[in-house]
Amino acid sequence: MKFNILVTAGLYDSQAAYCALQFCNAALDAGHEISQVFFYQAGVTIANQLSAPWQDEFNATDSWADFSIRTGVPLLVCVSAGERRGVINADQQAELDKPGHNMHPNFSVAGLGALHDGSIESDRTVTFK
Amino acid sequence: MKILYVFSAGPYSNARGQEGLDAMLMGANFDLEVAALFLHDGVFQLKSGQDANGSELKEFTKTYMALSDFGINDIYVHDQSLVARGLDQDKLMINTKMLDGKAISDLIKQHDRVFVF
Image (cartoon, rainbow over all chains, first blue to last red; front, top):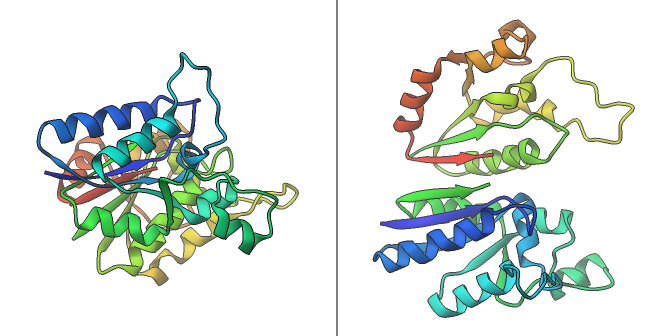
């Protein structure tokens, strides 16, 4: 089965990002496919590479980046939700004339159309909120 | 393909409704059959007589009154969620179809994709 993953809860305050990652690993181990992981609403904060949890705590940003590098599954950050919450890449920094950018390089920006494309081409969309 | 958007949070106290609405309007641009379900505090999204003047919040809920312009006509509300909050159809800004818990279970089964906000 092919899964499209939607994460809508934010960094640290919610367990959703951790559960979603566990789900993705288990699904791949069981022979399923993951089309993409789409970060929307507060979930965009997971792409913030300036987050610095204590060393004995779960680092959602780095863990997701490692997952994407290892599996090739794309990590997509909603452009409008990210801009509303200050999670932007270098291109957006220039476009919006902001003093910095913070999006982890293994995450990329996408629109809500990509969420639907991913959902349509997959068998299931699973939301972690 | 039939796609269902579920609204489970009230407006203003968080962005789940506003950004859920953004997602649903994007879905309406696709060649999809789009439906909306409001349950739990999500029923407050549709309450009529909202007035965000005086706060600095955007009254995004006005867009619900234009859903038919986007081709979204299948709008469902969980009846018990309404009753538990002292509301009824007359206090909502648009006409909806009332469903009980069993009917909601069937509704979800009838849709190919479900997004929960």
